[in-house]
Image (tube, rainbow, N blue to C red):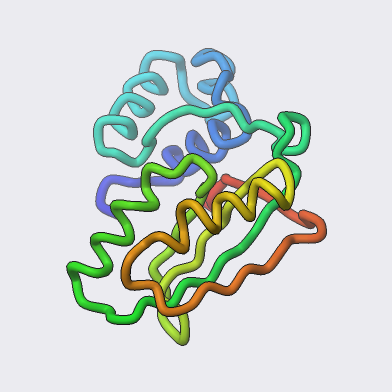
Length: 153
């Protein structure tokens, strides 16, 4: 990436650890004064490298302990079929992640729900009603060993 240096990487690494860090503290950690550090953060935001700031929430603590990974195979892989699927699932709040995949399946979704009954409702009332799906395979996570939203910079 042109114009992306080690200081930018340090800034991003620190912000991924604590996005609420003060600009002064961030500047000290990356070896800059506050004003140039602030300019760099603003430039990273303007370039779309920093896309937002979030709070990480414990899904169990808010009553969503069940994680389901769902592999989807479409009947056809035409552009309009892929677009229709992507548009439909993008508004479903249960779907946290969705990836278009290579291999035997077309999509991999990560869904969180409060319990098995909620997953059954999601499956029956949303997923199976989508046109063009040829198969759905669900795998339930037993435990989360590692989670990170931080990129390895």
